[in-house]
Image (tube, rainbow, N blue to C red; front, side, top):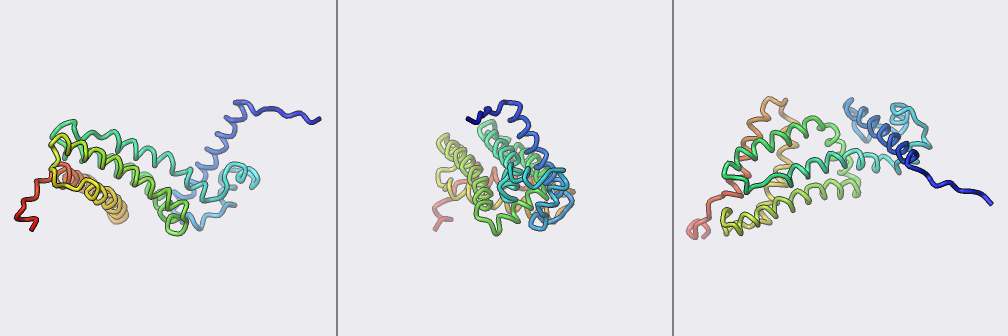
Length: 215
């Protein structure tokens, strides 16, 4: 009878090391500016110094690779959003500005990786779902804080929190992507300030709409 040996922690550690090696190799190729769709598995194999069999033992395909490559970044951005507390004080516009300075800096450092994700999301349903789930999670976090601020009487009762969160989250994400595409970084501080003040005074502390204006 054949004997079977349970894989131990050392094997698990080896697998994690190989995973990381492949991920870093793919990221290096992306950072060289080549479109992700044009990067071949063979290029990744050569960059990582592994065999084709090893690659497919760790990743199903290039789609699986880009999803796992961006998962950590996605979680980092979501954690930043959830850690922001609108109830921490009335200096929310300035705090949001600092928040967006950090968000934009992270997006700029990883701009080619994020561009690769958006590129694949344009034609791959699995990646598109992953990409939109990221923004949906951010949207939910912002919606929750808007509702809490409404209940506390600090955000106007006539604000539609679901609509407002959708506008500032999804619109903000598109604005950040466009800004990084056309700006060399010199305008990051001004952009973060405008975004921070729009979020705070356009939603969280927006003046109530009078009945006359609503008509």
